[in-house]
Amino acid sequence: MATFKVETELHGELNCWRITSDRAELLIAQQGAQILSYQRVGEPPLLWLSDQAIFQQGKSVRAGVPVCWPWFGNLQRNPAAVQGMYLGKQAPAHGLARTRDWKLLGIEEAGSALRIEFELPEAQGDLPDWPHDVELRLTVVMGDALELTLTSRNLGNTPVTISQALHSYFAVSDVRQARVEGVEGLGYIETLADWEQRQEQGALAFTGETDRIYLNTPARLSIVDPHWDRRITLTSSGSRSAVIWNPWTDRARELPDMADDGWQRMLCIETANVWDDVVELKPGASTALKVAIGCEVI
Ligand code: TA6
Image (cartoon, rainbow, N blue to C red; front, side, top):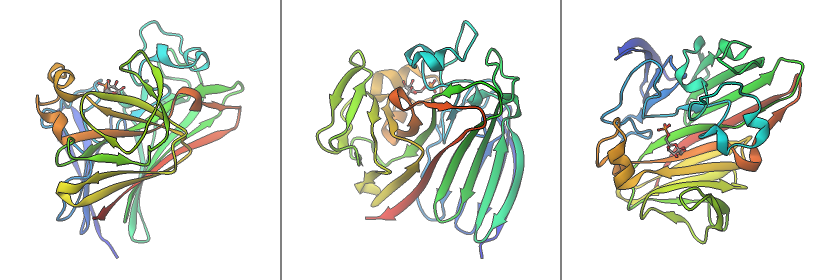
């Protein structure tokens, strides 16, 4: 039976919880219910926390798993039904949830795992310029795998359409040596070439800036990291799309919260509902976007 220690910490302006067991350590912030880091004992970190991360209210931390909701990326690139939900003029990138304070509903042991539950009460009609009534919860289960489930339930009387993502930053020994398996043969949107639709041939190796939306994704994707002798596995449900991102040299230099060479040590695979995979929630309906992050020795 695992035992867990829960401590509260302040990182810059952000309230955080550090949860330690004999197997792993997790750091999670109240803002955005954002996992900031996750490391299993005796292994390199699984999730990446930027050396130059900025812990400021109103700014998403370059780390872990930002929750993108109720839209992903640039709102203008979303289907009209997602755009129509927002009444403001300046739509922040990746939605509203990642920079708001969430409410911790509870931390409880469940067998040999620990279950942490957050809610964003403002999603029930109080988000700026997004006048809809949705119960939004994030459940994190820290067990053999790290499981995240983002559940949205429409409590209102009219349909709500959302795009969303668990924008996970994974730690790798060197992105130039890593590859992503599971994308072979998939169609993808190349956002760096005027959002052209293309088809992936083999596994994805990184040779430059990468920012792609993969479509009709399978339930399992993985990151093979030969230098660290491991395969990080992502097993998802409630998602048929994934975004894969690495800023490479020039974009990394432009990011104030990433070291100039920080791009070498990370890559994002974002379990998502984007593009033609956005979700329409009829009144009373709910959807759960889920990913279980595991790790195997290779
Ligand atoms: O998911 C990929 C992406 O949308 C990229 O285009 C890149 O901008 C990245 O997310 C990070 O966005 P952020 O707003 O957190 O700087």
